[in-house]
Amino acid sequence: MKVIVVGAGVVGTMHAWHAVERGHEVVHIEREAEARGASLRNFGQIWVSGRAGGEELDTALRARDLWEGIGARVPGLGFRAIGSLTPVRNDLELAVAEAALARPDAAARGYKLLTADEARAVNPALRGEFEAALWCERDAAVEPRLAQLALREALVATGKYTFLPDREVRDVVGRGAVRDDRGETHTGDAVVLCTGAWLSGLVREVAGEIPVRRVRLQMMQTEPLGEPLTTSVADADSFRYYPAYASPALDALNAGQAQDPTGAAHKMQLLMVQRLDGGLTIGDTHEYEHPFAFDTLEDPYEHLTRVVESFLGRPLPKIRRRWAGVYAQCVDTSRVVHRQRVADDVWLVTGPGGRGMTCSPAIAETTANELGW
Ligand SMILES: Cc1cc2nc3c(=O)[nH]c(=O)nc-3n(C[C@H](O)[C@H](O)[C@H](O)COP(=O)(O)OP(=O)(O)OC[C@H]3O[C@@H](n4cnc5c(N)ncnc54)[C@H](O)[C@@H]3O)c2cc1C
Image 1: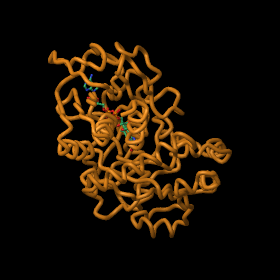
Image 2: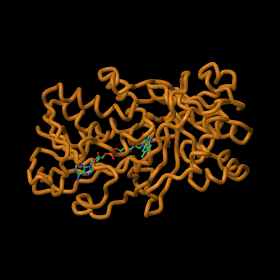
Image 3: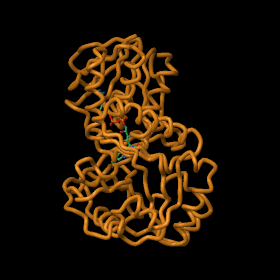
Image 4: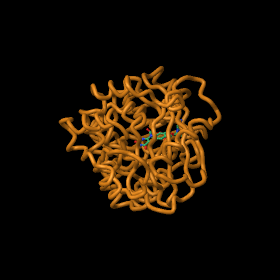
């Protein structure tokens, strides 16, 4: 079989990976010289902890295993099974962590409640004030700026994979066939459009208005911390956003403890992961209303800096980079992905939302299974 994959973010790259794994030839077409979308702008968190029970958690756990296996074969993507800690500071926050531990799927996530001293034994950089921490053993991380490149290098080495950058696919022109903006037609046994958050142009023409929305986030990265941050770190505001934490205890937290006004205004939580160079990737905000801002705002960064410094008990290193990214999310957020047949032998796969980096290996595996690759 020959598979045409359009879009070289993580979703497209993982489709290429599974197709090649199953012995097929892949032509991978990307509009940019290198992918520059959500897949490079994210935290690289392989995030199991907050997933909704059921299909979403199953997908994340399967994907996490796939990442680990692929990471062993492609060390350049930087897979680390580092787990995560969510420090809590008072009884209201602690009760949400305890409710999470009482979930029937808590063991599958590797949840454990640690005292502050136990948390510091796991992650000594957390010298700030907190009472306890929710540990999620299954959380992991990869290097988003390197992963696609490392995967591609491994794919090229198979001899079954061709990367065609700097070509925008403009049309579906027949069974399993697309045309790019150089006028060339690419025909395969299957075409998978993994075009991320670009919902206009090609996608609107072939699929119409799909039940997927765009979400914009602000991020930053520091100079090296100068010491290891051995786990990912989240704050209790993340309880407010991730479905796994829905509980009467969360209702009590929302009712009894107002979110910081800047955090609330920008729908923020703290997520933080250390890069291989020692810098910290820190975020995030959530913007849903269009038109999106074209600039980044300082208030959210100042808020995140305060939260991080309070956990680390020390000043943050200088900020080296600030950026924003946009992902595509199914409007029905309980759906893991939007997978739609848009023409004979042509499929659109988009909308994995804020879990696309985590879930992409399993999403692509499902596509491969469903299409009988
Ligand atoms: C700031 C931020 C932080 C995030 N953090 C995490 C995280 O830590 N963990 C997690 O699981 N998820 C995270 N996510 C979500 C995750 O990054 C996305 O769900 C995922 O990267 C989507 O991958 P994609 O391949 O669909 O899209 P993209 O990475 O955007 O790739 C789509 C590609 O398609 C190309 N393309 C589009 N149209 C065409 C065309 N017509 N022809 C050719 N090429 C085309 C684009 O140029 C682009 O390279 C985050 C997202 C953001 C924005």
